[in-house]
Image 1 (cartoon, rainbow, N blue to C red):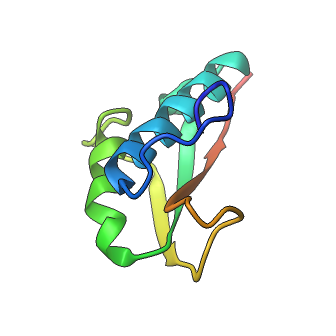
Image 2: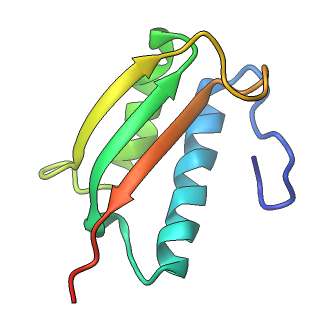
Length: 95
């Protein structure tokens, strides 16, 4: 979803994954963090065939030499049927 709550990339897992990571970046920045603070990502996809698109989007934001730990789960569906990708990010801020 974009900042206005509109779906980005209907039937396009790559566009949805790029939007998810852009949204995550905004959330991290709002908390005074960045992707360098992310220690774990969990990908939820409605089809494992979407994983290459999710990884490509991830690689545009994380240090690919030292990426955060990650796991992937194929789900029967997400909260809205048109959504193909969801990502949880766990970030740790050090004082």
